[in-house]
Length: 253
Ligand code: 13P
Image (tube, rainbow, N blue to C red; front, top):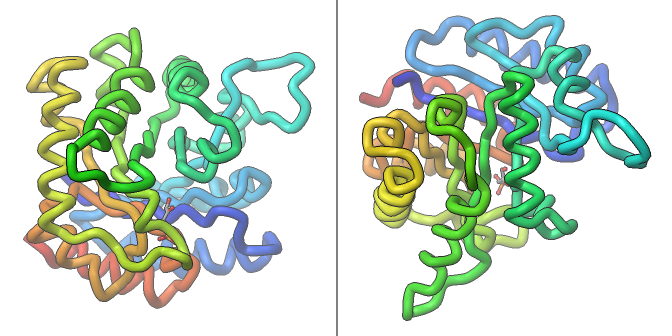
């Protein structure tokens, strides 16, 4: 399986020219790699401009979608709209969207609609804090079970899961998680996925790590942590940092 390096640009950069320049700087590097697939998720207003230059090695995704395709839904963007702009992927259930009201139920509707329009889904899950009794594992299990409720098994081939513990995300995070911890969580995630679908399907779903990933810790998550890829926030806004991570992902066994 190719390693997936996904850049979630969030509400950055502030203008399209900068977005195009950053994308093209990343694409130059990404195009030379054989063992890595790069996916850049810019704000939706830049998707069209970037998708014009997208390739099979450097694709474009959106950061969210709405589950209806038309009607009185102020501020929303639909699956066919982002698909038509050239996005092949869409992030669903990011903790920053959950904080704005997304629930497992709305996430489930979004995933179903994304699959209907042949978008591949990057489903983000992650707990806000840890507890000694392991309730957070139940929380993760529910995010998967409810988010993927009644989605046909064969569509799960188009799913990518990103484990992003909320406490490890963003500038306020104390630190990233550790490769060993990610490895344990990814085994747990696969076990839950194998109950939702079956073992064979679960083994084929890439499980990524996200949360304060940078060029210093990327290698650990990919080797010791056995991550199928990384979902990168801040460090995906620097061409040099992101390209260094692309090089690391290409090198690791
Ligand atoms: P940071 O890499 O900035 O911590 O963000 C992670 C993230 O939320 C990616 O989706």
